[in-house]
Structures are given as C-alpha cells and as structure tokens.
Amino acid sequence: MRSEPDPPTEAVARYARMLAALGAEPRLRIFRLLVAAHPGGLVVAQIMAETGLAASTLSHHLDKLKHDGLVTVERQGTYLRYRDNRPAVRELLHFFYAECYGGDAIAGAAEPATHRP
Image (cartoon, rainbow, N blue to C red; front, side, top):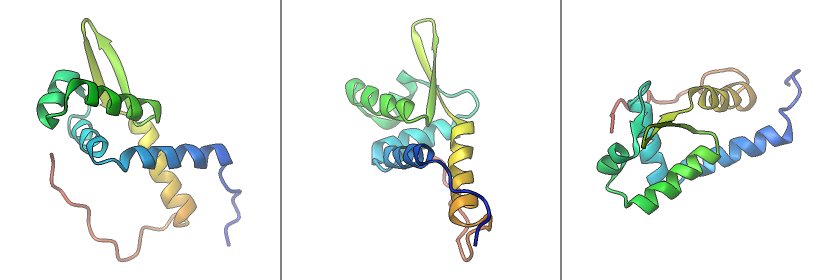
C-alpha cells in the first residue's frame, strides 16, 4: 500500500490528454521526429518533408501537441521551430513509474526499440 497521496485530479486529467494526443499515429510520428531532433528541434518545413503531411493537417497536429504540453514552439524570424517538451514528458513518465508502478521498473518489459524515424 502506498503512503504518498494520489496526484491531483487535474494532473491525472492532463496526463490523460497527453496520452490521447500521442494516441494518434500522425502525432506520434511527429513527436518521435522531434525527440530524435533534440535539442535543436525542427522547423515546420522539415517536419512536413519528413511526414508528408499537408500544411493544414500538420498545423492541426502540432497545435494539439503544443496544447497538451508535449511540444514547445519558438518563432525564429519567419519560421516556427518545434521541440519536444522534455520536462513535461519526464513528468508523465514519472507519473507512470511512481504512481502506476510504485517506483519499480516494469517487470518483464522488453527493452525499447532503438529504431529512429
């Protein structure tokens, strides 16, 4: 039995939104690209070239990832540079390990795939 209090309802709801955002295949592909491009991130044209998504579709997915805290955006002149939001992802992973698995590594879990997009 855990002795620590449960995380606030708002935090759990935020983690659920983050996971839902990653649950769409195009957004997961975009997020993986940004993780692989850490720390420099990518500008929209680079993401478009890698994913083949139309500008309006890509904009929708990037807005969702930004709104749910998974990516950050910085204007650089006429370009928008997107980066993965490492602190938010760390917080989400901490939630899984500390709150869902009691701080233990997941027993019997396979090593993560090393394939990069």
